Amino acid sequence: MRSLKKTSYIAFIGVALLLCLVILLGFRQYQLSERYNVVITQSETIIFQFSTIREQITTSLIKQDWKSIVTVSDQLKDLNSSIARLQENTLIPGEYRIDMAKQIDIGALAILSQEILHKKDKIETSLILQKKMRAIAEYLLQFDRIIVSQMRSKVVQFQTVMIGALAGIICIISFSLLLLYKKALIPLLQLSGQSKNPDTLSNGFFYSPNTCTEITIFVDAVNALLEELQSAPPSQGDTENLTEKLAVIINESNNLSNGIINYAQLLKDSYREVGMGKEETQILQNIIDAAERIASLNRKI
Image (cartoon, rainbow, N blue to C red; front, side, top):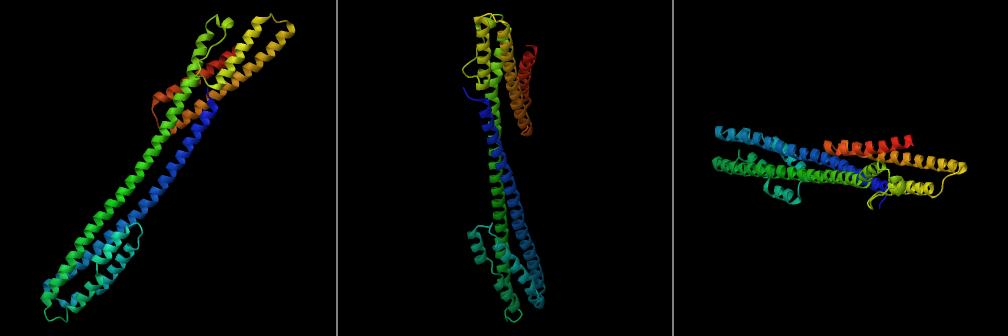
């Protein structure tokens, strides 16, 4: 036999801890999502800046307007600053940041765009410039796809952990509900059936070994009272004593019934918060109704 009160406290503490864990994970997920959105926005901004610069340089090369190519150095400087800020973000793995530093050389691109005006073979220099821009563009697109996929993967991992925590909460609540049904509701229903049998007054009440401690104490007290009543006819003084004892037992029974109702109501409220089905709610309501029937029998006594 195990105390239903202690079991309920353990279940409630476990659910509370898991709920705190879910809240912390949710807050952590929110933080990571915000930081990941910053990284994705920076990557998209860099791609847009570079695409604009590349379009401008390509147009100038087609028109052979070499002076316009020299004027993009300021834009390349801004692009280099954006790439540097992206490389400083710790959410990006170190190997990707090192590889970006090796693959993207905006400084060399800026120098080449400034020197093209003084080169004798401008066509050859423009081809080298276009080749460098094409390589950088392909790398930036690949980098953006890889980073976005990794960010999504990490968010999904956090969501998986949260789902596991919620599943743990539901399992604990379900286990508590089954335990309450097994140790409290079934014995109460059995005692209710025994009370309808006339032989119960002479034989006493019986309960199964799995009955919770609170109910066994109450049944043992009732059986002890029945034995005292059968052992000797009570005198007037004994009647008063028995009346007082009966009042004490009835009071204790009411307290236990109220406790069972309160435990069941707490489970029902917790159960409503996690949004479980109607079947478990009906079981909790049956527990409350059975405890209320015991309280009603006590009032009749």
